[in-house]
Image 1 (cartoon, rainbow, N blue to C red):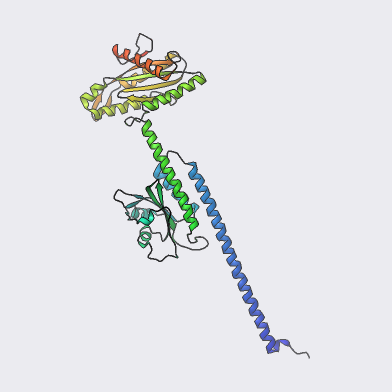
Image 2 (tube, rainbow, N blue to C red):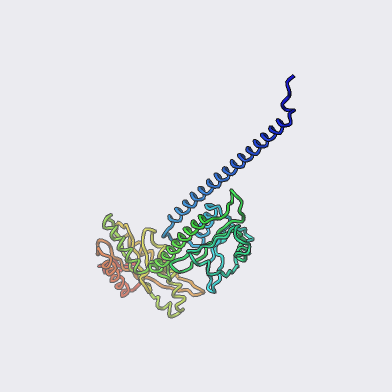
Length: 387
């Protein structure tokens, strides 16, 4: 009868060693595969974040130079930033006149948390203001590093970059995560910092565009009535004339001067006078089409440009409507003001073909109305005023 090898102690020890080796080998292989899987997941996540980051950059670039509502836009960008870079919270801190910083955007917080943080006032050190050395706080840092800021913002792991416009500090852009759990919420790194610096630069450019649009608006609008001022009105008239010459349509220029406006100022004061001018602007807007133009030249003088008219009667109808609307009493804080309007009308191409000549002809006709009874209109070159 042959001998059973499994009963041989040396053979059993050899088999046990092989089983142990194979078990260790399989554990090592499984651990290696798991590590590779985690690395692959992290790489996919990083690539996806970069893709979203590039998309965010493209969206920001598309808004360059637009007239934006600052707070709403920054709040929207903060929300997109959280989604794009897998951040949990984003805060925009703006400097107050006393040098402290207050949050203007709190994205990723609950309503109760926002209420607690709205009146937060933070003293930020000089290290936050250098664009070459942005702040990065991760789990590798000691707990005491920027502990006051991390606690105040309820954000343990964060990136902070300054938003600079030339050398002016506009705001601090702070974003971060509540935990560091791979692969879904990995530790913040310098690639995240570089993305945030790019976002900050874009936002600063957008703020510059917003400021520029406000300056341009102030340069082109009358601050009292929000109508185009003399400069903008002349530019718009020139542009409309060039279109009329190419397209072959007629237009009318109405030079409008208020009657008895001086009595309003003398009787009720300049505050009421300003209110009357604002009401006049609103009534003028309501008397013309959206395709037409109206602007304030200064004082109590206005200009309306009526485009695409067929006959001079079309301009006469608009002038009559304006006189009717402006003759209605204007009430302000118990005062009832009665004014009127004298209007001179010039036609393109009948009376002139250039903007200055059209304005001069309409102005001359308006002065004839003033001399002959007011609250009426007259075409350039005519002698009989109409009401």
